[in-house]
Length: 317
Image (tube, rainbow, N blue to C red):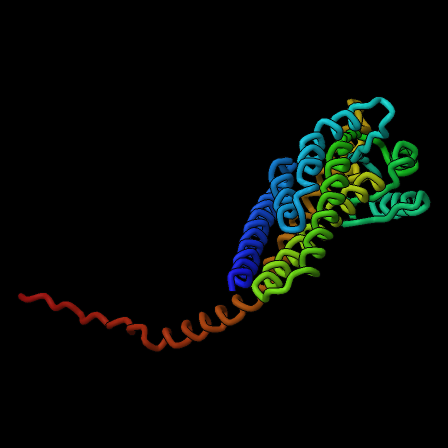
């Protein structure tokens, strides 16, 4: 009886230890997910605590080594990024403003140039007087493409600006977190394979689902960073030069006559347009008004008082 009670007590203690390890795992995962949403790097201590909990559930031999690896992760990453031989990962962007007599033609030429380099066109708003295009160009061909886009055949370059953001540390950080998340997920799956109680199985399955979602988020972030590094973004703005060329003043007699004739033609054209604008209203409203006035005049004539003949005045004697 005593040995049976001791075995039950040992099993209960083991279950409590496993439950404590799962709680620590959940806390570490929640902190890592929150850090992912804020775009921050998670601290090494929660991951080390989570690793230590797994060691408690599956054995205590790997806890010290995991703590040392988590503690030395940041210095190793910083040293790796800071090395001169490390290939820097840059996200490059550029903006070009052109003035062209034909906006649509220049927009088509710009699109053809980008497609020829292996790029593609994103959002585009092209009109007859202005256009704004978002172009995606391979980063290794950005400088050559900018030279072709600012060629005189497309228009006169008004301004150009470029920017570059170094994301090397972000990429190294994401890669390290992906490796850590995959190892953590494998450990939880191993615990799930050894679990026997229903409560443990439910908690471990929930933990596996959460860590798989975190891993998927990290993979998508790595994909976005890789795409931003591989393809540079070029914003092209086109506008039509509609300003008339300045006309030199002509002080001669012919110049004065030409100016007077132009003023006469402009005045006559304005008067004709004004008459044409008022004529429909005059026809629609003036004709009925004239007919009403004529009718009123005819009806008013019989009503006029006839002049009264004056009686002769007699003088009294």
